[in-house]
Length: 235
Ligand code: HPA
Image 1 (spheres, rainbow, N blue to C red):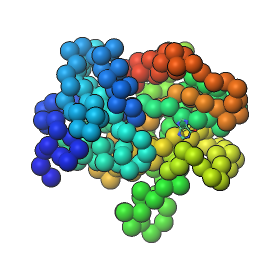
Image 2 (image 1 turned 90 degrees about the horizontal axis):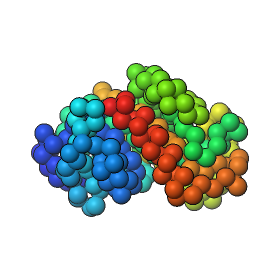
Image 3 (image 1 turned 45 degrees about the vertical axis):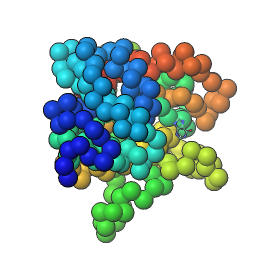
């Protein structure tokens, strides 16, 4: 497929080899304007802001994924396969099921379970286990240790429903799954199929165990900032 793609208007050379990917386009703008040197807007199709700039002398792109597996499926597919991106690091928020994780803690998603059927397209004779790139996981752990944040490494659940009629979160918790978000499994599938790298790190925005721990917008922003620095150091 030719560049620009149906969903990204950037020139090929405007996109860095590593892309940081929050869900929210406004967050992508915040990250670029807060942390990157000389950020340039390289994509604005559908308001999905993408910025490229420098962090510690290295070219980095920050582009939003939108919400859900179909949306991150589109952007990550186009970045890996048409823009020759090597690594996508999702920086998101999640709900947590684990008693050791509180609001503002971090989950490094080594694997992603899902109730979605994104992997059906590969026509595999069994169930595919979407996993993160090991080197990115290892380095994310090093950065979490350096930053002194509370974190856990493990499985996350990529749900196709935010408002889940069956309220199935705690069923996944029985299997040791740490938390729920809506994008990682599709990202990991696309990375695997393209032979590229992916990782998702999430800050816990809400806990199923401690529902009283609601964070303020400012606290969420601050904890998100801590995670962003971890992700930028990886890039
Ligand atoms: N469900 C799905 N995605 C989420 C949640 C949740 O509870 N919290 C943050 N992202």
